[in-house]
Every structure is written in C-alpha cells, then in structure tokens.
Image (cartoon, rainbow, N blue to C red; front, side, top):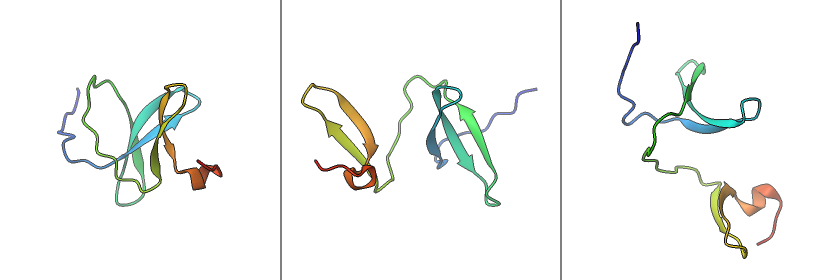
Length: 76
C-alpha cells in the first residue's frame, strides 16, 4: 500500500547526502524527528528562505548557489 498526501506548502530542507551522492528533501516533525524524501519531481517550484544562501556568477560562466562568502571564509 502507498500512502499519498499533498506536499504543497510543506517546508523542508534540501540536503546533500554525501554517501548517496544526491540531494534529498528533509521534512522535520515537531519532535525533531524527520523524513528524507528522494526527489523524483522533474520541475519542482522552490522558494529559498535562507539568509545564508547566495548566488555566485563566476568569470568562467559557472553559476552556483552556496553559503554566503562570510560562512565560506571567502572574500568576493
């Protein structure tokens, strides 16, 4: 049996799982337990709500999303 429920409006965290070499979507419960979901959605709409998230446009044309320069100990 498969249980389904809408994910619309659910807040979670996009995490990189090194051991699996992929991103997952982590949803925390009120008791601090969590579930990690594989991401199979092909064009998921996302709003970033993280003051430490910064876009970088590199001289070589590479575009990245990472932590702030201060968090990374870098100067821009």
